[in-house]
Length: 237
Image 1 (cartoon, rainbow, N blue to C red):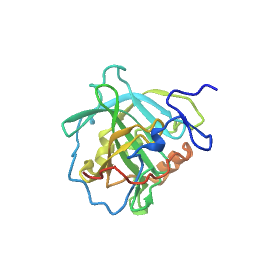
Image 2 (tube, rainbow, N blue to C red):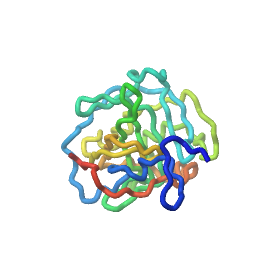
Image 3 (spheres, rainbow, N blue to C red):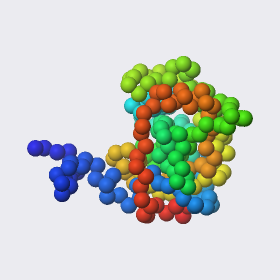
Image 4 (cartoon, rainbow, N blue to C red):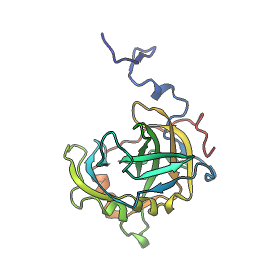
């Protein structure tokens, strides 16, 4: 029987298509447990304050967005620079509940702002945890408020809304401009689980209102990967 190139069988005969998901040394997500905040790899942002048109859809597990850009040209996209490397925000998607834990606690959701280098290779991710604001301050998130009201797309729906405009600077501002964060070397959390990505996890979660959280939960389904054992992740190094 033919199999996909690069696949293997385990001793039990189970077919594994993406071997790095099993054998990687710094897989994501992880639990940030009693770790001090980072002082290395400080990111800076450019173009995040531009209102970007793009496609709003559901990635089969929750809301997602891809900004419009030529497939071979990323330089017009919002960018993040760290360690002299510039990477470009190629889209975001939401996991419910969160993938990363902080001190053993999982948040209700997590937005992944995915960045690629000029060659289009995924190189960095900002993982923003989503939590509900307190009853005393239960105001809507300005970032989430940009999503088409009443048109959140269900995970069983393949509809794509074109031309939706998003100001991504709002997300950065709502987590303290990423001035306090943890960082580590990790991987994609879905197959093919490629490693070598720089992860940034803001200490401050993005707070949404009760109504916004209900909207997000209503169109999402369980999508977090099991927490990975810390090995060669070089947290904050």
